[in-house]
Length: 150
Image 1 (cartoon, helix red, strand yellow):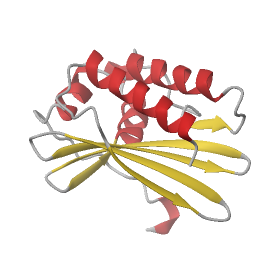
Image 2 (image 1 turned 120 degrees about the vertical axis):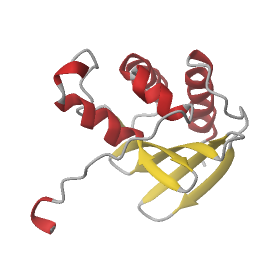
Image 3 (image 1 turned 60 degrees about the vertical axis):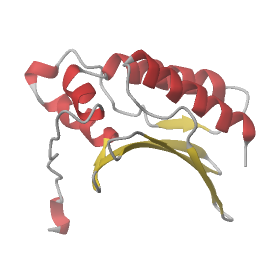
């Protein structure tokens, strides 16, 4: 487990939670999974209305990926999907483009700056409707395009 990345993830997620005054615990549950091809760090920040924000940092040999999800009463929603979904609507054009934002390099010398850049982007991309979802005031079913797999 990469303790530096774990610490950076916690600091950045707690900062995000504090900026938007979200009622989530500042000490997350932590899970780690290591295989021959990747390492996953999972942080789950929970609150008292049976909701949680889950952050997954998946470290592959060539690059890394961040996945953000939110669940409420056993309903899952991916923050990644929400941010991509709102890109399609004119009324949300002020949200910065999410393309490529969830992929990071695997360079230990730049990971701190890359995580900061990702969370700075996430803060700028968080709109009032997403805040309502994270606060448990609203829930939106996000359509998924199954494409040729239908």
